[in-house]
Amino acid sequence: MTASYAAPVHRWYSTHARDLPWRRPDATPWSILVSEVMLQQTPVSRVLPAHAAWLQRWPDARSLAAASAADAVRQWDRLGYPRRAVRLHASAGLITTRYAGEVPASADELRSLPGVGAYTAAAVSSFAFGARHAVLDTNVRRVLARLVTGVARPAPAPTAAERALTERLLPADGRLAAQWSVGIMELGALVCTATRPRCGHCPLAGECAWMRHGCPAPEYRRAAPGYHGSDRQCRGRLLAVLREASGPVPAEILKTAWPDAAQRSRALAGLIDDGLVARGADGLYGLPGDPARSG
Image (cartoon, rainbow, N blue to C red; front, side, top):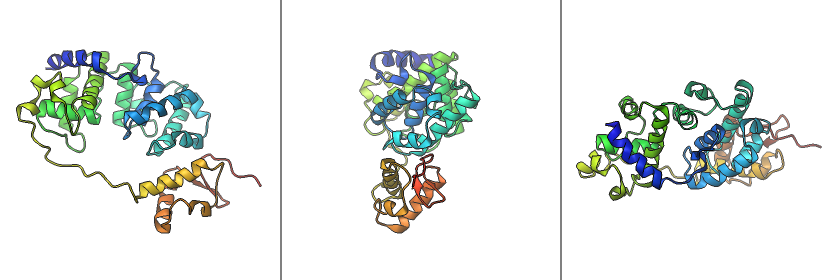
C-alpha cells in the first residue's frame, strides 16, 4: 500500500512544494526546531518573516540562551501564543547546557525540552535527522482520514488506530519516511484543504476512499472560539504594553491596555502563571528577565 501512495506523492511534491527555508537541504536542526515551534497554531505566511528575523538574531541555541526571556518575548512580537517564546528560550538554555549547544536527534531527548510535545519531537527528529517517525500534524491527519478511511475530517485528537495507520504507511527507511511525511503534509496544505479541497489536482485522487464515497460532509464541525473581547485579546494587549516599555512598569500603566478591571486582573494573573510576566518586589510588572528600573 505504501509504495502505491509514495511514488505519486513524491513526484507531486518534487514539482509543487513551496520553497520554505526550514525545508532546504542546508537547513540546520535549530532552524527546523524554531520553525516547528512557530508553526504551532500559526500559518506559514506569518511564520516566514518571523522565522527569518529570529534566525538572523539567534542563529543557534547558544545565542538565544545568552539573551533574556524578555528579549525572546519582544522578538516574538504578535506571532501569537507567546508562551512559545518563553519555552523556546528555556529550550535553548537546556540545549546549551545539556547537549553542548546541539539540538538533540532523538525524539525522547527532544521531548525533554520545554514545550516540545510528541508531534514537534517527531517532526524535528524526522526532518532534521532522518529518523523514522509518524509525523501527525493537522494536514497529514486530514489527508489520511480522507484517503484511507473515507471521512472528511479526523477526530479532534489522534487516536491509537490513527497512529498505527500512519506508522504502517511509513517507508522503512528514515529518510524516505521523512520525504513521505513532508509530502503528505504539503498535499494537505495546498490541495487536500479543510474547506475547499482541489481533488482534481490530487495525485492520490484515484486511491481516495472519501472520493469513492461521494465526498460526504464531516460528522461534526469545530466551532472557532471568538477573539474580540476575549481573555486572549486582553493578554495580548497587556503584553504589547510591556513589550514596548523599556523595563518594568507600574500597574497604573497596564490599566491603559484594557478597560475591564476584573478581566484585566484575571488575564494578568494568567500571564504571571505562564511565566510571561514577572511582578517584582517593588510592585512593578515586566517581561521575564527585564532589568529593574534604576532610581
